[in-house]
Length: 422
Ligand code: HAM
Image (cartoon, rainbow, N blue to C red; front, side, top):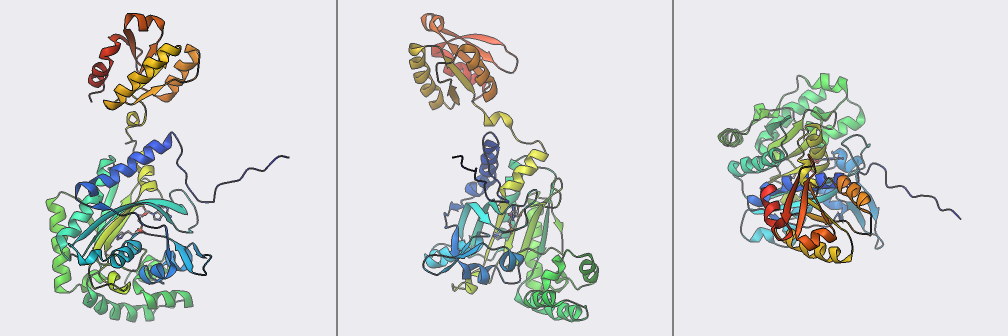
């Protein structure tokens, strides 16, 4: 009997060696600036009560209305695979009373998120984000810092071909004033029923409607940025001033619409120019009413989510990945049993000194082992045979040009640390 092969789920990106090393590197680079700024890890469930997202993310959004992976668990509860991270962080902060302690609560997270979107390059049904949230402080300085942390992550990847777009969705007063004029404007448009319903829940969504006739219709629509209250305008100007002081380039996009309904005040997106349609490599903003909507106290918050999959695609497109970081420094080829013992102990010593060392296992002939060394991409190779053991000297082979240097086995560590500038 021959069994059929089973395929992985549709629209899901997997990261396997050797590419997975680049993926891991990208993720670490994106997280590092948050750690350096005192954000602390939060590990949360990948599934939550469905109400968390319908209420937190909003029913006018595609994410909630079309893209959620929702199912009933064995206890008859409605469960949803998390489509984003902010609502879950808020839920946990409220539930565990973190908001009763020192503010702001500053956390970072990293993991899989799920949206049943139509798969295409850079758009997956399971994708990876790293994100941060700063909860409990309404201060333009923290808005600027959050944006700066995201920007530093992308700079860590060596990315240059992206732009930061920012806008402000203002406070409740600004949005109420704008909504009156926007609704009056929308009433004059000839909308189908579904669009009219979306507009009723969140009229800003219409700016995000991709249909050409809708885009044309919205050209003259009133812009929220022209309705900012004095305090919202002042906050937004301060954010811009701080960004300029930190030398972070940005453009103001008054028509930006984020895909989630909880945003207020400062909102932003990072858009990469080499990625085609799925150009958003990260985004975020303030969400000043979210905690209250989720049953907590009325505290403000701001954060971002960066797309690890897309950031990796961007780094590949810009050829900014440090390939040498993803391979071993040294490939050790022992010939025979006593050589293996020396290889094992030497490798321990080298690894402890930060030298990434691989051993050729299996009683392979030298030729096969050299091939494996070549394939591994290791920067140096050492063959350890009887003559090397008796003389105590090995030839350190630099793989880029084949140059051999004779080195005492006891000196290998220092020699390599120097050659690798460790
Ligand atoms: P978002 O803009 O929906 O924001 O997602 C953030 C990033 O995740 C996007 O810019 C994109 O790079 C990536 N992303 C989203 N969907 C997909 C997909 N289907 N495939 C690949 N990558 C994707 C949020 O999720 C908010 N929670 C961010 C936030 C945190 N706002 C405040 N705090």
